[in-house]
Length: 376
Image (cartoon, rainbow, N blue to C red; front, side, top):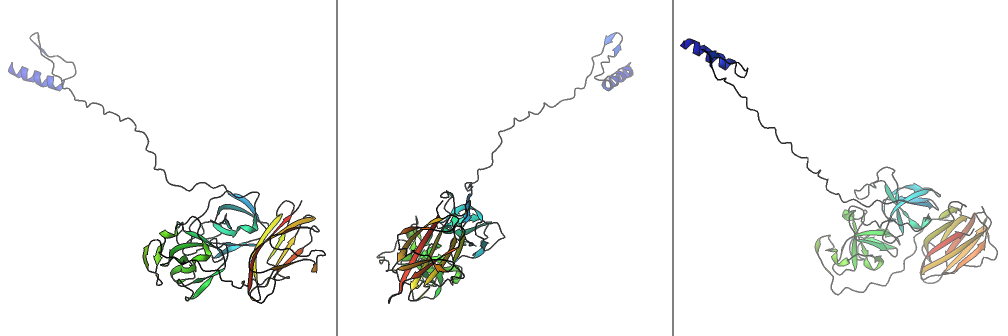
C-alpha cells in the first residue's frame, strides 16, 4: 500500500499541470501543479521629445549683387593695393558682389579660382576689386567686411586718406617698407605710446607688421583707445588712451608715383555699350615738377553725347585735353576741378582724355576723379 502511494506522488509530480487526477479507493488526490512565474511585461518608455541640435551662429545669407567691370581689373586678396593679386578680370565681365570695405571703395566678389594665401589665409573663393570700375544698377546692399590678413575677426580697420610710407617702426627715422595708396584698407594691430603712429598688418614687414602715421588713416567706428600700446621692438606694454596726444601733423606733399601710362598705353580703355557699360569713374593722381606728371584715359561712347565731371583735391591745377584719333577736339577748352561738361561725340569712335599737372616752381600734388557718363 505504501508503495502505491509513493508511485502516485511521483506520477502526480510528473504530470502536474496536465489535469490528471489520481484516485485511490474512490478518494480524490489533490492535483499538484507547477506554476511557472512570468515576469511582468517591461513598461515601454514613451518616446521623449527629440533634442534639437544647438543653434550654431551662422553668417547671414547674402544675396550677391550683380556688377559689370568697366575696365580690366586686378582681383586682390584684400581691399588694398598692397594685397596679393589673385588674378585679372577683363572689361565688361559680370561679377557677383557679396561685401564691401568700411569706406565703400572696394567690393568683395565671388572669385572661386584656386586658393591664394595672404598672411597664411586662403581667399575662400572670394576676392576684392576697386569699386570705381564696377557698374551696378543701384547701390549694392551688402555687408561691411571687417578683418583680414592673419586675423579675419579683427574689427579694427582704417582707410588710408593719402599716399604714405609704411615704416618698420613708429617714426620717420625707421626704414620705409613700402607705400599705401588712398582708399587702401589696413588692419590695425596696435599704436605707439602717444597714439601718433599705428601698427598695421603688412605682409612685407617684420613679423608681418608695419607702422603708419595716424594722421593719414581714417578709422571708422573704431575705438583707438582699445588698441594695444606697442614698443619700437614690437613688445605689447598695455592699452589705454594716450595722455597729451600731439596734434596730427600737417600732411606732407609727396610726388605722385609713376604709373607708366601713355597715349599708346592708356591707364584705362573702356568701351561703352547700349546694354552694358554706360559710365566710368577713374581716380588717379599727378604732380609737378616731379613725380607722375600726366595720365591718359581712353573711352569709346555708344551714343552721340557724354557728360564729363571732374573733382579734385590737392594743391595743384590740372589741364585736360580731349583728343580724337590723336587730334584735339575743336572747341573743347578745359575742364576745371568741380565742373562738369556735356560734349557731342561720335558713337563707336575712340576718344582720349589727357590729364596733366600744371607746372610750377613748388611741388604740387593733385588727386582727381573723372566720371564719364554716356547720355542716351
